Length: 400
Image (cartoon, rainbow, N blue to C red; front, side, top):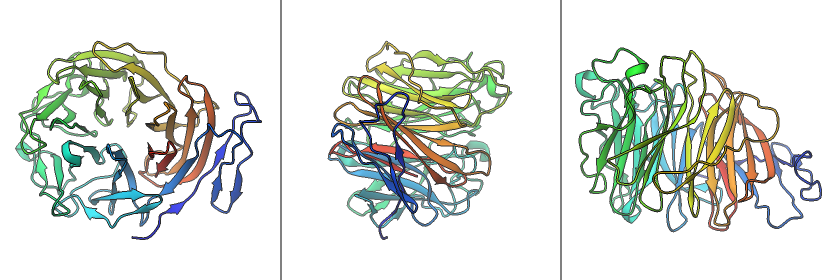
């Protein structure tokens, strides 16, 4: 596979950023590069997936390697591909799903999630498509899982993780660490569910690098419910605590953002981060990222994305959310990245909707939360979103 296409638009915000800090972006065709007179502002590079790829997820391992998983094919039943990203070039892709057409992209929220565990092992979890096998009990939609065989360079046959908590709709989440722990979370109501109000977040755990998983257990408060067609995110912090972000559905209209946190992966604390009263499923996603001493969580509320700093221990303390500058234009699907200097990149989609693409936008912040640069570029495809990450040199990339 050859080099990826590159498009980048970067622009300063004249209201909050001194114009001496940034030189106007120079647009050359579909690409533009940020020129800066301040060496403390790292460049942000936008990279487009090749071959019609969408819904990238990126995780950077301890050696600085960027692991990318993305979707291609029929949105109702396509395939997942894995590659590493060096510079702007993807390695030859490896198909993740062992059964063709067993992944789904429709709705944007049900795509693959990736985590790197002990020894650099790559773990991928995703919602199965209508044709996916093996099925969950009762012929229900499976939460599928596969891990990379490092010596063979291929993924193991896909497995279903759901043992009892059927009713998968919105996307799940995965997290792994160097202790051999792998956690897979999803929300479902079970066979007796009457609606979103009795859905809960369920967690399946592995202590042997994903070789085997425990039967899933509910970890969210039963009174919150769970937004049926919204995604989730998961992260294991530096202290070993597990964090989960999801959206509630209490009384149908209370679509609030909740953080679940656990020091041991068994007992969880539930914290409401934001409120949103809407009598419909917003089909939103979440993002978690690690800083040197805390966790960042990002979410959408009423067409606006935001992120908050969360103490990396349990119980946690929450700092007031940061909201990107400028008028909100249907901002959705946030993605966070943090470099070694503590600078924060928040990327998101604008204008996307059901069967409609849009733009990718971003805001760069100093460690203290001061915005220092921003940008926007058209070209997010239907069912697409973006994934932000940082390189070892402190620069940022956004894949979309």
